[in-house]
Image 1 (cartoon, rainbow, N blue to C red):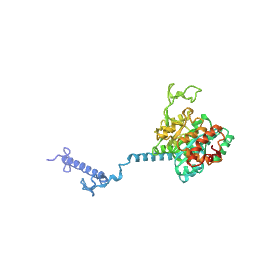
Image 2: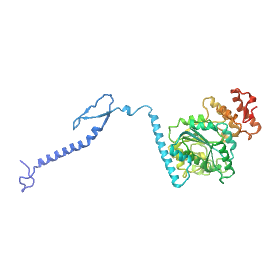
Image 3: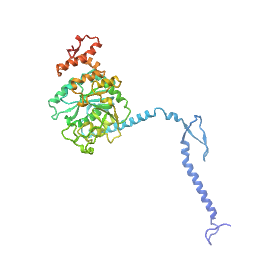
Image 4: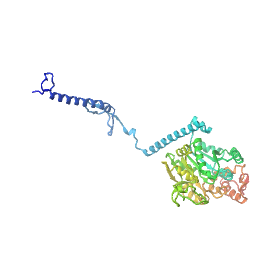
Length: 446
C-alpha cells in the first residue's frame, strides 16, 4: 500500500513518501562521497611520510578511490641534528644583520632626501660592496690631549704601514675621535688638521667639543663609524687607557655570532643628587628615591657594541635621550632592547702590578687604567708601564727606537730617563745591542 501526497486530487503522478526519503539519503551519501574525493585527492598524492626503517620503494596505501603512492624523503638529509645551537646562532645573526642593513639603507635614503651630507667613503662602499672588519676602535680625545695621543701612538697603537697592515690583515680600524671647536676653523681645529696630515689617524665628526657634551659625542661617533666601516663591533675607549689589541680581539670574536651585544665592565653606581660633586646627575629624580643606584651599564673607560646596536643608535640618534654621564646614556639606550649585557672584567684591569699578576695567571688584560683617576693617572708618562707589562711593549719599543722624528720633550728629565731605561733595556738586551748604542727617538738611552 502506498502513501499518496494530498487527500483527494493526487492521481498517479504522486511520489511515495518512502521513496522520497530514500532518494534524499542517497543524494546526501553521494554528496559526501563526492566532497571527500575532491578534498582528499591532492593531499594523498602530495603527502610525504618519513621512512624510519630506511626501506626502499613506495608502499601502497588503500583509500576510498583505490591505492595511492606515497612519496618518501629521508629526513636525515633535511634536518641535521648536529650543531643545531650553532646554526640557530648563525640564523639569528643573519636576521639581525639583514634588519640592520635595511635600517641603514632607510637612514641613508632619509639623509639623501633631506639633503644631508653623506661621507664619500660611505657612498663608494655602498656602490662596490663594503669590506667586513672585526672592530672599529674609536679613541675619545680632546684638543688639549696631544701628549696623551703621542703616548698612545708609541705604545699600543701601530703607526704608518703597521696600522694599514692591521686593517687589511686583521680587520681592525683604530682612530682618534674628535669634533670641532665652537668657532669652526679656529686655531685648535687647524692644529688637529696639521696633526692629522702627519699621522692620518683621526676620525673627525660633526660635534662641538666639550666635556659636558660627551653623550652627544658618543652618539655621533657610533653613527659616523657605522656609516664608514662595516664592522662586527664598534669600540669606544678613552685616551688615558692602555689597550691590548690582541686580547680585545679575542674577547670580541667569541661573541661575533650573537646579535645585539653590549660588552664592558658592568657596574651600578649611586645616583648623585648633590650639586658640585663629581658625576652629579641633574636628572636624579628620574631614578626614584634619593640613594638609589643606576641600572647596570658598562663603565665609560672602554666598552664595545655590535653592529646592530650601533645602527640602532645611528637611526634613532635624534630621539635618544642624553644624560650628563655618557656611560649612563649608552646604557639607557639599550634598556628597552633585547640586548645581551656581557660583563668581562678583563676590560677594566688596574695598572701594574695588577695587570702583571693577571697576565702571569693566564688572564691577560684587554684594558688597564686606575679607577681613582678614571683612567691611567698621569697617563702620558705611565702608559709605558702598562705597555711593558702586557707583553706588547717589546714590539712597540723597537718601533719607537727606530723613529728618530719623535722626542719626548714634554717629559721632565727624571721621568724621561726612567722611561728610556725601562723601555730600551729589555729590547737592547734581547737584540744583542750594547746599552751605549741603544737610542730612543734619537736620544741615547743610557
